[in-house]
Length: 141
Image (cartoon, rainbow, N blue to C red; front, side):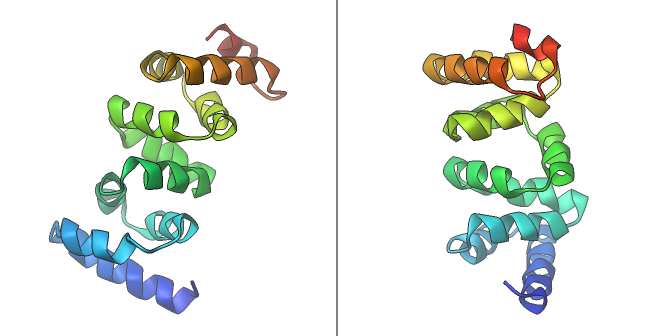
């Protein structure tokens, strides 16, 4: 997506989000690649970023979360409800889930790991123990 298309889509979605027009936003995003959705979300105002991300199904949201830059991902993680974050982590591949969980505050990471499928949680914990840049404290998860 080029810069002109991005600006047009962001402007359209900003307007639709201010009107809380979920249906039209979903129609715009339905066939959009997760990397492009991440770019759109990155360019939205703070007040609309969480709203638009919340319209994504869990599968798409997990793909978009992987594509977001660190700053946008951290901001969004802070804004998400615990249950929604757990659903997204549960949907991710174990490597991506591990990377995201490693970035979470320890108490949030524990809650997320306790909420997801046990097999997935065990795999993420195993991978966390082997991550080179993971803080030692998170290994106790």
